[in-house]
Image (cartoon, rainbow, N blue to C red):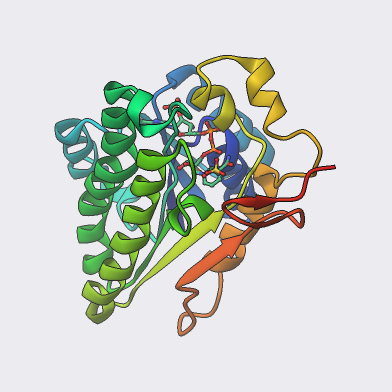
Length: 250
Ligand code: NDP
Ligand code: 8X3
């Protein structure tokens, strides 16, 4: 079994790489930070024995994405599962104060990157007569919040794209799951607040958030159900969170 995981250099993607490698999958791991990918592949191969592939790639780069997946060696192209996980938030400013370049990067990564990678992988799944795409959305897809206009919009787009992919890919037995986590303690907030670790840490104060492994375990469950079962839409939060905007802090 082969899984492609984008955004495998930290957080959910890294935890998913461990979980799927441990479960016997061969992983194709995508991210921009080559050193982290190389170290991860070495670790996984040592610990779990299977062969894994690392691809240093910026999912925003349409040409590079197409080239990399077109040139995938035959031994790697029977892709069973694609986890579109690479993504980010940048900034938490009110709409009127937000940085336009941050908007561009979020749209290019979370929406266009997901589309490019899906478009490049789907032909292999169609040729195989089956497949499973797991798109990582967010609770932010379900309710928009202050200072999150474009991040929330990108995740709402992931939600909509997942719904339409599910319809279009039905004749090819390709499952599509939108997996929407709530607040999770990964590098996400460090990236969002551009290295301001004090503000990033505050996000997770006063409650127990989700951890990367929680989401990886759910992705594993979703990906390994019987062939006739598909979880279409799954929202998961920590117990202290009711929805995108309601969090009980103590
Ligand atoms: P992390 O910051 O820990 O991980 C993000 C991953 O995405 C990294 O591996 C990063 O790798 C990769 N990435 C970012 N931009 C690109 C790019 N242009 N090309 C390729 N890879 C890229 O955050 P999380 O693990 O928390 O986030 C994973 C996904 O989950 C994101 O889509 C996020 O929006 C979503 N999410 C996160 C939640 C949270 O609270 N943490 C909750 C709900 C959803 P590299 O920098 O090496 O390229
Ligand atoms: C990440 C969770 O609450 O920052 O998608 O939008 S949140």
